[in-house]
Image (cartoon, rainbow, N blue to C red; front, side, top):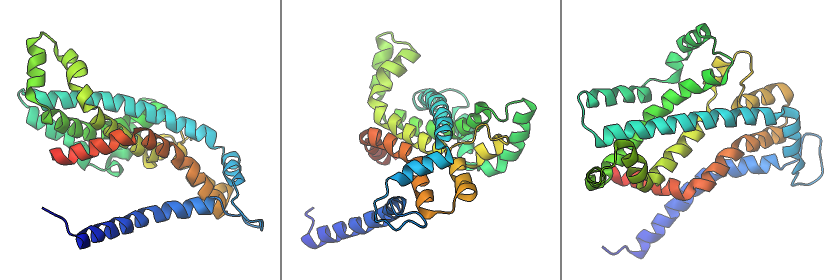
Length: 269
């Protein structure tokens, strides 16, 4: 079917409008971050705003804590998601359907509904104000989505891949890591980026699980910086750029796999 010139122009116009809508807030924050601080009359760009925000807000420690939490959550949740998705996607065993829907409950129950009782449970175990209290709830949330995603990916693979590996004498784990995982790398990279983004942006769980602020992550640091240290829009925007930078870097590094994985996931569903 041939696409007419008018339809092509309309498609590009719609895409440009959506792109402008998505980029406008980003450009606004970037321009504000490079604008003059209160009382400054010199023309910009003011790159020193980022250094000033870093120094005043002491974001180095908060970013380090966020990176540690994100690394723990993504590593554990991704590994468990691959294992669970492999089991649900390639194996048939009694109760597999019921158990899979039990996993999906993690997607349906909001964190706000369980965070308070979970806090008291973790406090009883002496885990509050530790990386484990911040990471464990997010691991559970991420595994629910990761299992759903990886199950769909593994079920879409040709069945003869697993069958051929079994005929060659490969065990279950060897089949997973040598045969099933390599062609699934785009989907794995996609879910890893999503897990990292969700963990990095999480606000409520670190706030509740670390009442002593020993594991105050970057979003919490930004909120405290805005209310306690400054009301200067340029510095607040610069702090926002600092907090968002790791997510942008991770996405840029994995964008090729991310886009491929998203397209494959859409095609499979």
